[in-house]
Image (cartoon, rainbow over all chains, first blue to last red; front, side, top):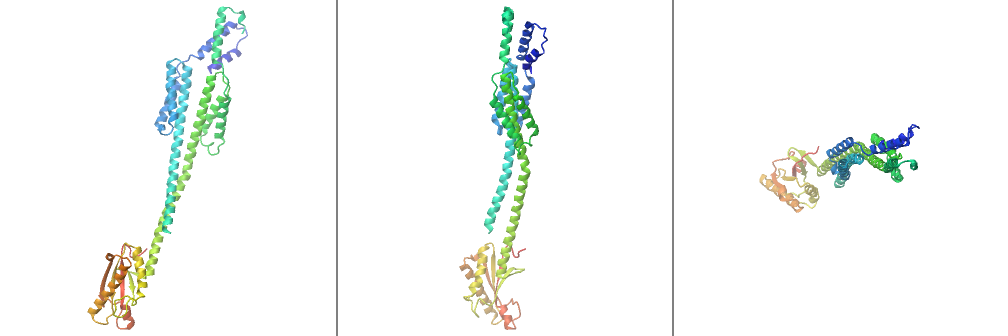
Amino acid sequence: MTTLLPHSTITQRPSGLRPLSVLLLLSLTGLAACSSPPPDRELQAAELSITNAEKARVADYASPELGEARNKLTAARAAVSEGDMEDAKRLAEQARVNADLATAKAAAAKAAVVNTEMQDSTETLKTEMDRNQGGTL
Amino acid sequence: MNSFMLDDRKLMVTALAALLMVACTSAPRDPEAIGQLRRDLTELQSDPQLASKAPVAIADAEKAVVAAEKPQADAEQEAQLIYIADRKVKIAHAQAESRKLEDQRTALGKEREAARLDSRTQEADTAHQLARDLQQEIDDLNAKPTDRGLVVTLGDVLFDNASSTLKPGAQDKLSKLSAFLIKHQDRSIVIEGHTDSVGTEDNNAALSQRRADSVASFLTGQGITRERLTSSGKGEGFPVVGNETAAGRQQNRRVEVIIVGAMTRVE
């Protein structure tokens, strides 16, 4: 992680280095941490996860999470255009996990619907049987 | 910092560096959120119904929680790791729940099949029971299957000699028949009167017709509609045995009721 670099630089500092050079180095690494290229990988991953969620017709079952994912992706793109790449990366990562959660929740909800239908049809059969039994006796 | 020894330029650099450091230094950690994450994950991992269902997602969640538990210099990064870990725990939970539900389907399918089978068995049993009941009623009527249908032979018990008025005891004999017809509305009957060969043929034909009509009107009195009843006097022309003996003539004096309907014979 880039944020850990200042510490490691300090621990590996050769004893003969002058304080000014250390300070310069520190400020340079600090600057580098806050100005990186756009987080393309994270953005793409978020887009893919959202596409997958949409394909799985998640909107029917887990729309809050999918909505959150879309909002985060929009915010990530805005952060890129404002030059805040760290923020963009974080937002893209958040978008991705929200989309993945939407997909997972939708799958669970669908599975529950199928199971309930199966249980209902069994119950219907049993109820019919009880009624028939009552009718013939 | 030992800034007393430095000149203005160095001071500026120091200030800038310090500012950058401060911007990236951690705010107080959020032990409550991290503790909650760990508890949620542990709950999932110790749920015997779920723990084994989504091993990959649970391992992924475990990794994310461990990462969130590590102290971070950057507060935003810490919040980010907590956020990601929270979603990953939830994803693992949802995936495990899905698998659990899918696994339950085998049992649910078997239950439904069993219920279907029971239902069909019951239907068959019901049909058999109905058939048995009907057979019992037919047996009670003493109805015999013939090529004309089920035939109930009412012997020489309904009428006095040469009379077409039903004897008091005859009504008991006919009440079973009317009960059967009330229960089975889809059946109709043909009532045939028969005599022995004593007397003239014309008289016998007329007498047998009047007797058949008497039976028919008794049944309409019991609530059977006239359309379901046909009465005819066959006279002496259809003896079942010879008329030479008294016993033979008694057998030939009879009313035959032919039950017409969908089913003439059971099984």
